[in-house]
Image: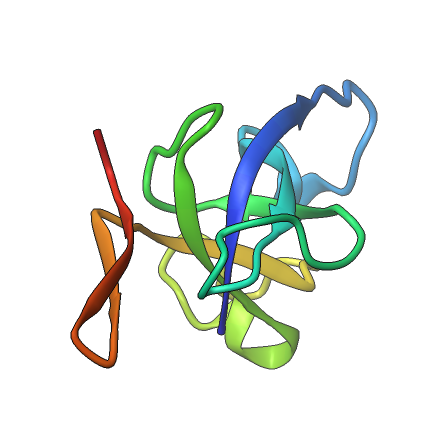
Length: 97
């Protein structure tokens, strides 16, 4: 599981049948300590109603197909949570404002 910031969305009128009606977002992976970009952006299916600029939890691989929304869907990454705060060794590294 990684943390990422939602930086955009994807609109696709032609896509696999099981992706119809699903919200696809672009997420930028983040370093958990600095909360700065860490790696290349990726596309994730939204399962929790997240939006632009929110910090989210993302799962990938077969774990991305373990939610009610993604079961049997051809996805490699899914947003499974919206993060309110991150605490590492007693220090807050992120807090939703």
